Amino acid sequence: MIEAWSVADVRAAEHPLLAAGDPLMERASFALATIVARDVARRRSVVGPDGGRRDGRVTGARAVLLVGPGNNGGDTLFAGAHLVRRGMGVLAVLASEHVHGGGLAALRRAGGRVVELVPESGGEGGASRWGDPDPATVEDAVSRAVGADVVLDGLLGIGASGALRGPAAVLVRRLVEVLGARTDRDERGGDGSVRSRPWVVAVDVPSGIGVDDGTLPGTVLRADRTVTFGAAKPGLLVPPAAGAAGHGAVVEIGLALGADPAGPPGPAVRRLEARDVGRLWTVPGPEDQKYTRGVLGVVAGTPTFPGAAVLVTSAAVRTGPGMVRYQGPDDVARAVLAARPEVVPASGRVQAWALGSGVPAAAAGGAGHDEPDPGGQHARIRAALADAAGDPGGATSSGGPVPTVVDAGALSLLPDRCPPWFVLTPHAGELATLLQGRGEAVDRPGVEAEPLRWARRAHELTGATVLLKGSVTLVVGPARVYAQADAPAWLATAGAGDVLTGILGVVLAGHAARAVAEPGSVAELAAAAALVHGLAAERANPGGPISALDVAAAVPGVVCELVAAR
Ligand SMILES: NC(=O)C1=CN([C@@H]2O[C@H](COP(=O)(O)OP(=O)(O)OC[C@H]3O[C@@H](n4cnc5c(N)ncnc54)[C@H](OP(=O)(O)O)[C@@H]3O)[C@@H](O)[C@H]2O)[C@@H](O)CC1
Ligand SMILES: [K+]
Image (cartoon, rainbow, N blue to C red):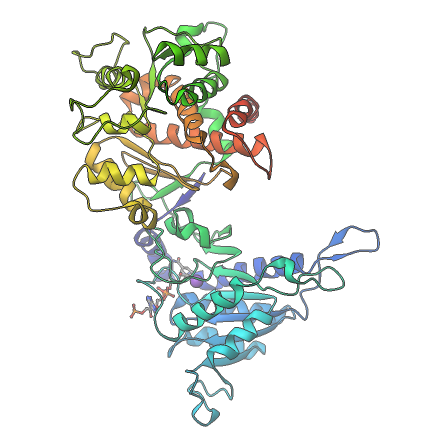
């Protein structure tokens, strides 16, 4: 599992170490330089006499450091000094009036060069306040950076507030403009090494991201790699900022995060990895039979949208429940049975529900409003929701309370307050509609700009666990946030969400009692389902187009691997 800690928690953990004179910056900058050198060597890899590729030489490679006012710039300058000692040509571009004095002195001692960023018209006789003969305009700095092998973004770290300001902001905007027009494919050297585009390494975080909330308040230089110190930060996992972080590397510097019982209750954001999920899977034993293994009840699809019912039930059957029951109009049930004869088209006890996929939303006005009910599905969903919440007046006798996936049209049928074992699975547009219905002034772009904030808000307002679908899927439940980035971009295809509904429904059915008794566990189960969904998409056709049904078909193989590895 990757654990991301808030800025306040990281600062609190570093405090006693700094007070005891622990050389945190030395550790951080040495590790940063080691990773940068390794990346540069790989990037300059060449074809050897045997035809295989081998790491290239670090000596002679060029690094440009973008240096801001704080300790983030200090880390970068000290790392620059290490890189000089490894034989690299290092140029620091100072983008602030003040920079870390010790770091600057170390870089100079090692033989690194330093220029100070000045306005285009600046220079003022060619002398800068750092006593270096070379002031550099933004265009100078950009052309040095673009021509380098590696750029270290050390403008701002966890001390950032808001969008980058001043000369650093101008520099980054211009650099992003110029680099945006280039790709690795533009040009390779005769030996096969990449020449045209520098490798960008963000120091601790890409400068100017919302470190705690994952927002992008201004232009940010997109990194190929982020080397982060002590622990990951929420903004490295949460979109949209997570998209600027590239490959991650967490450098251990001795912070005792999570060790203090009086300290913070846990990381701000978590990300499950494949090895975490196998242990969550309910594996049947010899004493199990279909009713003990978990029965999932599905209300999905309408005569107009029967495909969703087929997709939810297909994915559910493939995920390994004891049984899947389907409730819906006869012609939809026939389509479901034609695809999956294992499905039982009758009501009865269930351990979890999957509701609403392929069912249109009820007209505004909510439950009880006199809208036409497509195929009677709204009535079935309302009954199941009441049953799942544990309402004794519920019209079905399926054995609630039980955990429930609330998707698509079912989101419009929710009561004002839900139990945390309801997992709402909106995409950004559906979340905006749900929030608007509860008095929040936010639209889809607003949700996309601050998905963590709005998923949290939806959790607060409804009480339910919220799984916000996207290229990074966020899950917010009681005291837990997960950010899963397992799915290939190819998964953005019609029906993919229905498949997730089926997988998640079965995961919940396998842990029904725990989900109700320990609401904090629901978010983890939902994150696990998102991970399996993403891995199944990757397995369905690595690197190429995938259909939703192909994803469902790939689930058994993924589950098998996860369980075998536990
Ligand atoms: N945690 C750890 O254990 C370790 C942490 N380490 C390192 O320390 C880093 C944190 O250092 P830091 O506290 O000095 O903050 P950092 O981000 O460098 O800059 C703050 C400065 O930027 C300014 N500023 C703020 N916003 C701005 C904006 N939008 N645009 C422009 N300027 C802005 C702000 O000005 P102010 O807001 O105060 O006016 C202030 O001057 C951390 O990320 C990691 O790299 C490691 O050394 C090892 C151990
Ligand atoms: K940075």
